[in-house]
Each structure stands twice: as structure tokens, then as C-alpha cells.
Length: 190
Image (tube, rainbow, N blue to C red; front, side):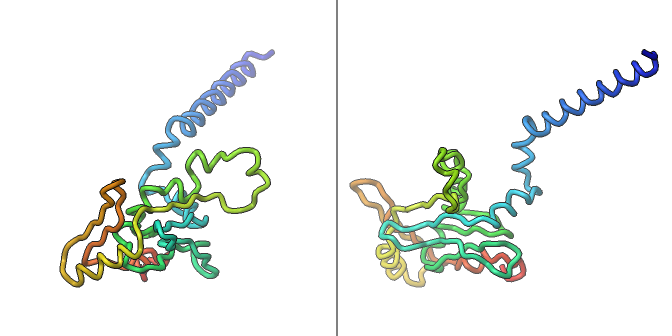
């Protein structure tokens, strides 16, 4: 074999090995930190184009749910049927402002990214329903409404705890806000 061709083939082989090593470093070593970067919008876009699970109170009232948006920039938008009643507990899920409250704490379960929901088993291969988790809280809507009515328009907070179990039954704070306004997918409206 010609020495020049041999040197060129060795040089190309070294380049391929270097490319293979760098590609694996980016995907396996640097991948998780790149996914968590603030300027990475791929994860956020993925989350807004998939439904999220519901958040419900202990007495079965739906506190947060995903609704399809036929003409929006994203496929789904988060809705909070109780308005400001559970805003400080549930939080909001907003493209503009991120997530807070229960929406942030249980985000991996609500979006179906937790390991239990991501890899449910072989039976999930034939299941076409969305792979999301639902969260049920210990707060009760009737106790929450009573706390809101008792505090009225005075600034402050009310927390009701079940002394037998330590479960939070109500957590109201005034002033409050409507998470539906914050979680709108339209940045100008939010």
C-alpha cells in the first residue's frame, strides 16, 4: 500500500475515533446538564405539547387539568377550574414563567417523565392513552372555601391541619391570584 494512502487512512480513522468519543461525551456525560439549562426550550416545548395529569383535592374536585388548544402555539394549555381558591397550593404551569407549587414539585409525575410512568412494562406497548400521572392532595375544597371566607379581604394566611394525621386540609393566603391568567400560552396575555 502506498505510504501516503496509509497515512491518510490512519488520519481519517483517528478523526472518526475522536468524533465517536466527543459524540458520546456530549450525549452521555454532558446531556443531563444541557437538558437542565435555562436557555434550552426543547424540554419546555415537549411538555406543552403533551397533556399533563390532573391535580385533585381530597374530596374529588379537579384543581388543574390539561385542555387541548385547537389554534394555539401548543397542543395543550393548563386550566385551573377553581380559579384563585387553590392558587398558592397548586401553583401554575406557564410557558412564560415556568412552574411553581404542586405543578413544579410533581412535574415529573404529571408529565409522565417519572421512571414508574416512563417504563410501565410490556402491557403499555398496546395502550394508546396518554402516559401521565394524576396527583391527589389532602386539601379539601370545602375547608379551603371556609378558610377563604373566614379570612375575607384581610391580608394573611390560614392553614388547617388534621391533628391525627398531620394532613394539610386547607392552605389559603390573601391576596391571591388567578393561575389561569398566568398559565396562558399566549405570552402577551400572561
